Length: 311
Image 1: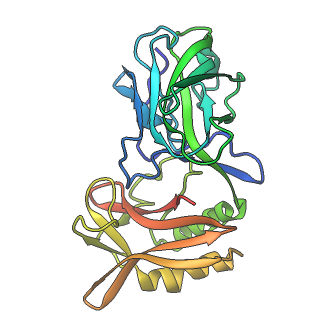
Image 2 (image 1 turned 60 degrees about the horizontal axis):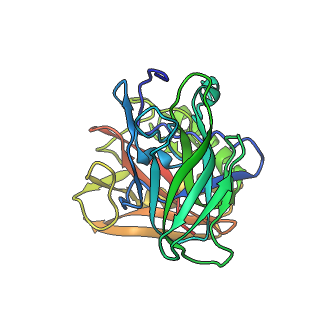
């Protein structure tokens, strides 16, 4: 048993982001709008009604993947289908900024073996005992390596549990502009002070912005709700887009007042109804692409969500 906690889908923690240059890792499952069966696992542990399943391998989730059977991962494996990159990033252990003791109490992989289905060859990699993301070079040649199977040949044993824990797997590392996240904090404070009941949730947030203060009513001046169409959808099946005049006249000027220069602005997934245009906002900073969309987190409330896009 590791701990009893209540987990929210919207708690997004990145425990490694303490430097001025922010490192972000792009998961194989890119966003909550995409459901690709990219990674498959041998099994996963369910304990105290918490599932430590393969979806936890996203860098945006503050729970690890833990295989079932408390045997230090002897029979565990991960399959990455059609791996399109020649290097991946792995963060090992149970990483919880509120419970750092869980890292050493649980087991971490020390040596991993990767089988390449395309070449029928296998490589072994030695991992350091750290939660920092470690680069694994799959091939010296750029490009896809095909399907790979990861097994665990040796572990750093936990002081209390025999549960093997992997914090995340990712396919790309980028450097982000930390000023963007400082700006978002200030804009959220502006929303709060002016009682606009809006909140921009980013992957740097470590808490759930609870309703009703941060949640904006669905029937509001900011967004449009529509049927499940196109790509402008959210996790629960109801679509939301932001009013374009709100993006142009309020949101973008707020970022500009914070000294954020958008290299490009793109209005995504435009929908027109009653002569009003609704859209999502796409932009780039230092060649890093982002998107702001409306995301319902309750039947009656929504938030604005900052999403890192694939580059």
